[in-house]
Image (cartoon, rainbow, N blue to C red; front, side, top):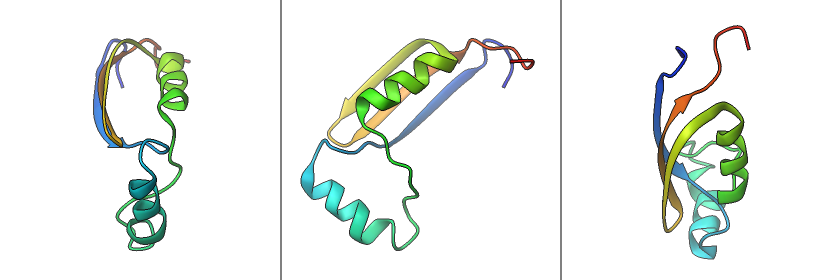
Length: 76
């Protein structure tokens, strides 16, 4: 990704709903529709803050969606 490149994504985050966590762990992962590792909201924030700036993150149930910008150049 280029310096200041935009990263937009959405995915499942764990520990927001016991029912969703069970479904992802016992059915969706086994079918190959979801692939670990799965992060909590706080774990994801830490990861994003390490590599990205201007993070616009929203949580809706067990789904997180975000837009952020690369803060590292290709040499880092």
